[in-house]
Image (cartoon, rainbow, N blue to C red; front, side, top):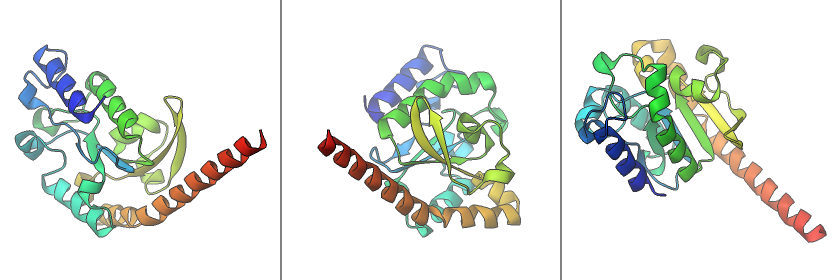
Length: 206
């Protein structure tokens, strides 16, 4: 499986009429970034600019996201950026549960393929994929460890950049949460090294 194959399967499903919001392959806005990224960011849905350029987060809110990522020490090309759904809802309305369900297999395949150390959710819809019983205002910027699809995953909920642009308070929180990324990634690396060392010691004792 590859990212190219996931995109091809999305476009094939669109042509077959199996995907809401995407009657043509040209409607698909796939995820983009490094296939070996340690950080996967998941937003809500493409907007107008994204549907024109066929790239996620390239409009005004996308520019804020990419700028904030870079200032935190993580250039956009070093991460992977995707969305819950891969086509633009009319008038940028919220995605429906049926639309989210239709695109779920493709996002799940991205997660499996990239296997990131950290998943950053942008907004409440992507957060709900992993943390369904919480409010984003209460948990943003706090690292969560969850069992998802049989695997331990680290989830960092954040405000969506579009919400950050609507409120000075949210924008301050948005930037502050991203400033935590270097320390969080360093901690995750330490945890990984500890687990690897423990496995080596256990193997030697057997």
